[in-house]
Each structure stands twice: as C-alpha cells, then as structure tokens.
Image 1: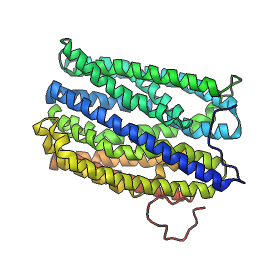
Image 2 (image 1 turned 90 degrees about the vertical axis):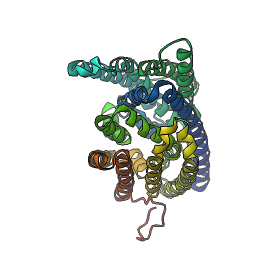
Image 3 (image 1 turned 90 degrees about the horizontal axis):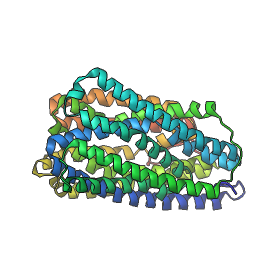
Image 4 (image 1 turned 135 degrees about the vertical axis):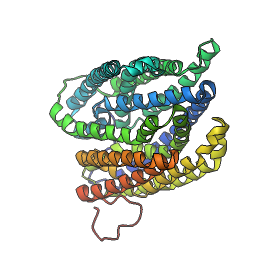
Length: 452
C-alpha cells in the first residue's frame, strides 16, 4: 500500500469534493488550534525574555532569530514547499519510486546546503570583523549551530504537510520548540546563567535539537509503515526547475516578512527594535490564520488538479478564501481588544507599540481579501511569477521602510509593511487568474469569465 493521499475519481467527483473540503476544513482547524497554542507559548516566551534580558539584549536576540529564520527556511532550496507539490501528485499516479527518491534526496540536499550556509555566514562575519568585536559575537556563533537544525525541521514540516499529517507538521516546530525555549531559558537563568542574548540563542539550540529529533523520528516511523521499500527514481531537473523558483520566492517571502525588523536594526537602537518586534510577535496570532489555511489546503490543491477536478479545485479555493478572511477579521479584532494587556506584559514601555500593532493587523485583513493566489501559483505552476512578485514587493517594502522610518519612526515601518502586504496579495491574485484562470478574491467574480 502506498502513502495515503486524497484521491478524487472522475466518476465520484462530488463525493471526492466533499471529502476534500471536509478534510481541508478539519485540518485547518487542527493547524489553527496548534498555531494559536504555539503563539501563546511564543508570546509567553518573548515576554519572559524581554523581562529577563531587558530591551537591549532582547533586541539583539530578536535580530539574530530573524536571520536564523530567513536562512534556515531558504536552506531547503524550496524542497520543503516542493514536497507539497510533488509528493501528492506522484502518489496519485502511483509513482512511489519518485516519492522515495524525493524523501531521501531532499533530506541530503537540505542538510548539505544548511551547513554550507552556516559556514559561509560565519566566514562573512569574520571578514566583516566588527560584529565579532561587539555584543552580537557570541549569539552569532551559536546561531550557526541552530541553522542546520532549523532547516531540517523545515524540511520535515513540508514532508508531513504533503501527507496531510497536520499535527505532526505543525506541533513540533511551533508548539514543542517554543515551549522548550521558554523552559530552557528559565532553567538556565535559575542555575545562574546571565540573562543575555547568547544564553537565549543557546536555549534555542537545545530546544530546536530536541524538537527536530521528536519530529524526524515520528515522521520516519509513519513513512516506514505506509511506504514500502523499493527502488528510487531521482528527477533532479524536474524538482529543481520548480523548487528553485519556490526557494527564491521563499527567500524573498522570508525577507519580506522581516524586512521591517532588518531596516529598523540598521536605523534604530536595539531597544527600539525590541519594541517593534514585540508588536510583530502579537500580530502573529493573526498571520497564523493564513498559515493554517495554507497548511491545510495547498497540497489538496495539487491533488485536485492532478485528478482533473477543476470544479472541485475552484470550490476549494472559494471556501479557503472566505473562511480565512472571516477568521482573520475575528482574530484581528480579538488581538486588538487584548493588545493593551498583551503589550503591557512585556513592560510598561511596550504599550507604545499599540498603533504599530493596529496598522499591521489592518494590513493582514486587507491582504486576506485577495485569497490564496500565492498557494495556487506555487502548487499548480507559476512559481517563477510568484517569486518575481515577492521579490518586487520585498524591494518595495524595503524602500518604503527606508523612506518612512526616518519620517515616522517605528510606525513608518508598520505603514510600509501594511501597504506592501496588501499590494502583494493583490498581485498574487491577478497572477493566479492570469496563469490558471482561477479567481481567488473573496468577492464575487463580476467579469463573467469561467473559473471552471
């Protein structure tokens, strides 16, 4: 028996569609619940670190974590996201040799690339020189060890998502890892370690190692039970033709998500970066809605497309877009209502971040109006166009931050990101319509053009 996957037969289209939609909704709820719990853990961890370390050390840790996330996610070369595109399609065709090859080859490439990126980053830091003489030195050295583990966990997440194992995909990196970081920091400080950024990054190393060990072990056991041993058929050209543009898009997307923090770290002192970063941590409760929707439906878009179920695909897109927008509005409203309390727990000075948070939430809601255009481009073909859009929006967001931060301070960074986020979502929707003829925005398609 091959790995379980959603299959939609032509003769059983409506039954298959019902199962697909029901499974997607259930998976989205599971993912969203886990991510909300993870966001709670992450929030408590960030409050704890801000209280323990103070504004300056917390700002250093925030900047280091941003770079770990960018480089670690990019080190998979798009193979993590590509798993959701290739594995369901290969399984639907019964090509298990390609599935086995992707699992093994992707793992090897991810680890090799992550080690190379970490070594290259350390070399650049050494050549630059000044960072090794300042407060970033020790945290950067430890971060180089975290990077391969982060990349491996990102790859494992993609594999688990491709099999619709939502809990296994999401819980270890976003729930277990966050909880372990918090616990490790408490233990370290309780044993007499100084509450500094280097200790926080060291705790991150320990937590990531344990979390990826649990996730990888569980994933291997499940795959061995469901995937019989057999030959492997590598298709590197086909994989990288799609995955490298996805990787470029992911790198640009990761950069897009943190360009505001990066610009602030160049223009403002660490304490100011910490104020802004606290607001972005709370805004993650809103962003998780989109993440949950993507994790639950992206691979299902691929399965429906591979089965030739055009009507089912269009219906799934509409369902995803509308439910995600409603959830984004509700969660955004709840976050803003609780914002004074949530920000105040970081420290009294962090309440000044409320306008920043309000602007960022408004940007997320506005972007939600345009639906899952990026998911369709990455999963069904059009990843190069998605990457180009993201690179363009990254340049726009960076330029706006450079212009608006000197004029409006940290609020300028939030305004830049809200505008660029909305524009990016709109561009992705237009691109998905042009490439696949699928309308993704939540409002009715008034042009009369068929989406089936």
